[in-house]
Length: 329
Image 1: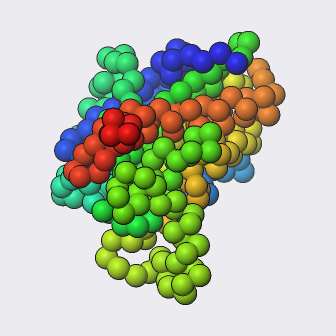
Image 2: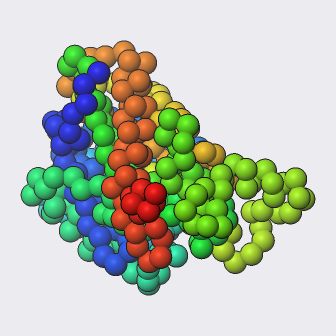
């Protein structure tokens, strides 16, 4: 399995735009791609995902939008639709072309100015950057601009998240992932926490799973109390897999589910009640492959993209980044 650049996978364009402490990331397939989605978090925010069910009549998707701004951020998808329609991309309905655009959002309103949110103009601008073929930027960009992680102890002990990407090739098969990391829990690499809920010294880690279990043992209601608990702090990991593999909608659904395995390997705990963890899979259909083989690449890409996001993130609005802790060590 060879690691490649996310922009190496043909048939897709990726663009990002940000303002203040929020932003959006758009993944475009001009010719349309078979798309699946897997939602495992308990608090998702999505657009047009029901149409992706294999029993429904949605043949192709032309773009997936990942955005901050909580539910307000879904507005960015409207700008993506306008951009694609102006360029003749979408289903030919006679009077115009209608792009199929799906979206997922994360909550980042507690980082920076909550009044600044992704909107149609930002979505439109992100598409413009995608068509300029700008290289993908990891960290405080796009949907990861205001992302944070490790919120089990509240804002004071949380850290900066971000957006990341990774891709792999095996033979003719290619698969990559773009992921915005904004989880309740910690990010763990090779058994060690690299970002998450900080201990009182704000240099070492408290262990989010330990915090949740301790609150349970003490018979306190972790997810209901306080004004700045995990429940109100803003969470969710959202991502999009892209592959040149040829799959039907059921196969694309399976790839999205395999992508969630990448989250489960490295986020502790994953898929909590207050995360909206959502993974899309876009399949351009250039090469045939077994779904389980492609799923291995997809899970690896999601996992590596999460690491890329955390290692590339920079401190913002009082949230320290993983690279800050390394410098202080």
